[in-house]
Image (cartoon, rainbow, N blue to C red):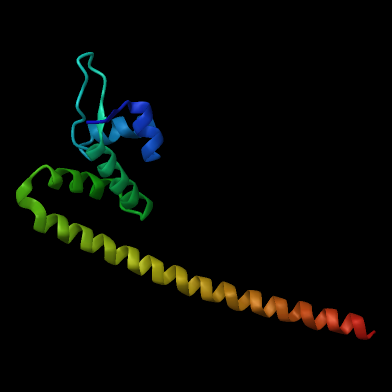
Length: 128
């Protein structure tokens, strides 16, 4: 089974070493295995978990909810609670996405107006 040093796990996950330690300390990430010398040794499973945590974080999940998700993942009887938490987050992401798309439409409208103005001005300059 392939394992990764903290530096490798940080590079592969996109998290800093400090964040990896913080996530473990706060219970967001389950306890990471240690080598005989006491160094953290990340597994493929740990990297998969980190990848999903990165997704949750980049989609705006607050630390408190990440912590709750981490707690829930340590208890096999909490799958319904995990589903509920992730459905709530997915709905929030959908609302954010819809808001961004509405803002993008406004931006596109303004750009179209400015481009039309430029074309009008350029045509006027050619005619004069």
